[in-house]
Amino acid sequence: MKKNQSASLQSGGKGAGERFSSSGFILAAIGSAVGLGNMWKFPYITGQYGGAAFFLLFVICLLIVGLPVLLAELAVGRGGRGNASTSLIRLSGHKLWGGFGFITILGAFVILSFYAIVAGWTMHYAMLSFTGKLFASEDYAMLFSHFNDSWLPVFWQFLVIFLTGFIIMRGVSAGIEKFNKVLIPGLVILLVVLAIRALSLEGAGEGVSFFLKPDFSKLSAESALVALGHAFFSLSLGMGTMMTYGAYVDKRQSLGLATLAVGGGDLIYAFLAGLIIFPTTFVFGLEASQGPGLVFVALPAAFSAMPFGSLFGGLFFVLLAFAALTSTVSLLEVPVAFVREAFKWSRGVSVFVVASLCFLIGLPSAMSLGNKVSWLTFGGKSFFDWMDFVCSNIVLPMGGLVVTLFVGYAWKGAAKEAGLRGWWLQTWLFMLRYVAPLLVLLVFLYSAGIIKL
Ligand code: TRP
Image 1: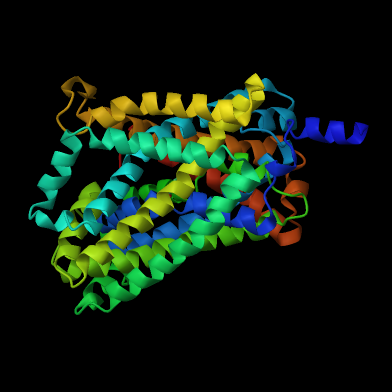
Image 2: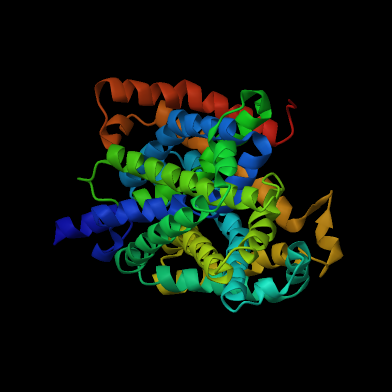
């Protein structure tokens, strides 16, 4: 009895339902990594920053910086068995590290507030597509901007946040894990169906070669930094997510193998997303580098021109919505884990409070799009863009830096928790101590506009 009590204290008072099974953890972590980043952001930045050559850079960044930091975050979570702040405090004995951890928690909270808006767009577009309404329009740029002028995005944002809350309300094993176990196989099936459809379009080759034939003259120092930043975003690093999930992992599970599985899953997913999006845009003569509107403006035009377009278009947006939801679940869990531990509230109350706050914080972002409220746009950026900018370019690299420095220099038990030995251990520590901090610092200085290239 006594032993049990101290074990439960150690784990921050979490019961048996607060642990992942080993496959459940891998699926949930892949679900977190795979998201709008892979299907909405990755294709358009690949289009903008050099196609295949950029993809190659992304792969390199993922391998040399992304995977070591991912393993570091998971190890901190499992070693500390707390939220992204208390784990750091427990392992270091210093409140200061916990303060840094707290910033990453705020980051996850704010990312969710606007990520949920884009997730909502995908649901709206899935509906429009299945009902055929999407293709009643001719001008997709106009359709997208009218949609943003309306209050509909706020409705969908609300739905996404509370749906996410509803899932994690049921706990780690009965909620997060179960949900991912259903959604991830669905995601894979949709992805394969859509890739086959895209690759069998007549003239798909040109899109494939844009995506897979590198032209190094298109690369710039800026491409490299964008690739690194995206490797972080795509693996859900720097925002406490993987530290939080790590706390629910069994001691016997190999974190090294889990890291490889998540990195591999994320990469394969980005690759297949590219094989869907580039052929489709090229065949229909659309611009792959047109920025954030690619998925919501160019692709509807492409789907409208292909046979059974409303079916394929609908499936595409459902795929996007699924991918987004497995990520929003991981984002909401970060502040919820913190609030539960800090205020000793039940999971249900914590979810309700955090989700409501997140919706409120997200309102200005949602309202700043379209023509609803003009004063929410300042300095040339809408409130939405500001939130994205601050989180993705400042808080995220900073969070990454904190973890690399902590695990590389401050935490003595890191090697044991990560379960690495010999060459693997040396390489991991080398990356965490020297390569990752330097590169992350560069990204940070560049993204914050302190250095120019
Ligand atoms: N990785 C997800 C994507 O690619 C988004 C995401 C989830 C995320 N959790 C995160 C990004 C934590 C940064 C930090 O869409």
